[in-house]
Image 1 (tube, helix red, strand yellow):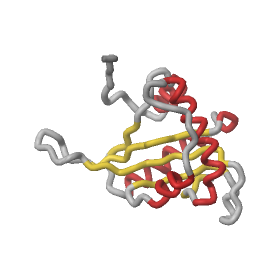
Image 2 (tube, rainbow, N blue to C red):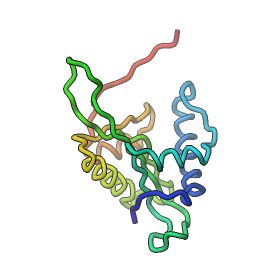
Image 3 (cartoon, rainbow, N blue to C red):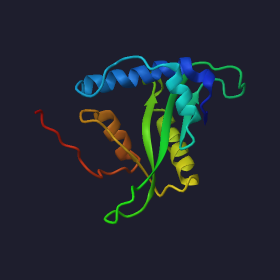
Length: 159
């Protein structure tokens, strides 16, 4: 059910990406806009050597046919910047995980996260990190069930 994303997944993935962007725009309108992504952004994700994109759903048996996707996730590798005060460590950063509302509560998000983590581990990552925006209680609960814990908090004040 989980596989590496392909270029022909773009149309189905763009609808999921838009759903995620609309949620983020509703939670943090000062940071996000619900504007459509362009196909070249999808291509860039697929071609980034330090990142991997996985999808759930679609026609898994026929590489020429993509039916609707139930979800997708992107992980990118980051190394600690050279700073003597920081412990050198390679991390996988989950940039996006989105599962279609109709496909939730079936284990797809967990399987996607497992695949993202396995890929990051193969790249030498020691841990997987991600950001959940304030107010996204569904995502917070999901990641807590997977064993994630708060690492830091970002605070802001308008000027």
